[in-house]
Length: 467
Image (cartoon, rainbow, N blue to C red; front, side, top):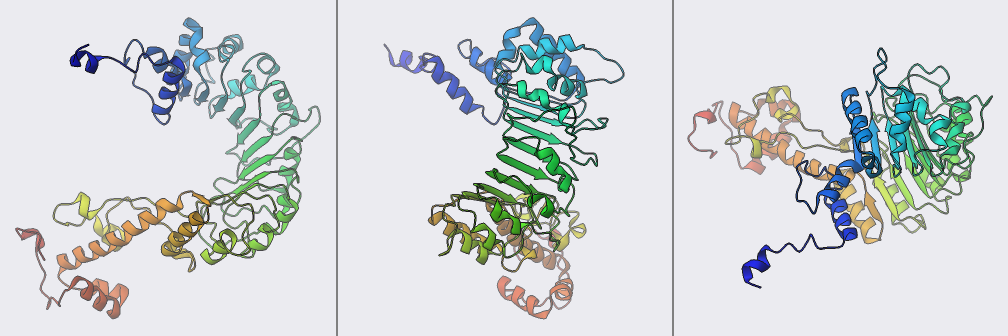
């Protein structure tokens, strides 16, 4: 064999199919594979990757998908996850239940189904006995948005056929209407196979939600989210939650204010908790006293705006009285995003054309992490805490790490834009008015600048960017 033959030889195509399948799984885990065939040998694996996760967001797309499956039933067996929304026309029904049932019957390996707005007929069909007893044998997660025209969306009789799904474990329900999650058990039966329940809606924190939760006697994991509401009050509900729960998430919309309706006094009764995720206002600053009474807690998370001082977090995570079995913390308290940067997006440190519309003359697009809202929750303190946690063998996840990086970039951008603005106007008047004389003197010392004696520097007329 010549050297040229050795170089041109395809070693990948001769790999076992199981290995090739795994390679494609990893290569296209977070993105779609190319639509154009890579090669004849790779075509089967490429097709599987394309159909593994199907996302539909219009009626024409859904019609094309059904037609494709009708002409080639083998495509359905490739699907593992499917998301559908806006897939029906209420004024003109273009499909019948028999056609939809045939469509679902091809999804023999389907594991996760998410149905959003505009899928009422699909939701009704999935909740019916005709599908549950014979189709979707591998379905373990059902996620759908409650149709706005349902009069009694949480009656148990709407869900009792879910017991016929042999693999179903997780149910996620979302409502954008002001429904109470109140269950009427008349005419229904308890859903015994669902172990993980997620409820999202503005009134999910109401005490009446308990009646619906009690319709799932095998429940182990519960996630509650008030979505657009930032004044959640979970206190009455947590006082009565089943003690069998091993996972509990209490979420809401962060407002970074001092609103507080703590429910941590009820945590000690949930002795089996291994996972706990807390939203803003759901706990007091003495939450550590309750958390130390949870003997099995392995994962502790804090959502957006759920600020607990770094000194208290340190006590929980690495202190002498730390949580004995803690393995992971999730820090989502703040988030950030880098916007327009003068050093990367401008010529010769020119301020953005709209800089006067932005605070401190920065460019647009910045999302500044809310580290300024708490004295004992600064970027520096958080970075030190992350280091301590990891040194102690605790896994740290969440948005916080990225937020500290954004904060560092923002602080630098702030200084450079202040410098650029002073150079542009030729005085310190605005800087002095906003921050005081001491700040200006420190600013001049840091940048090694003198007074301008009222002279405005036309830096746009300068040939070189040297000040």
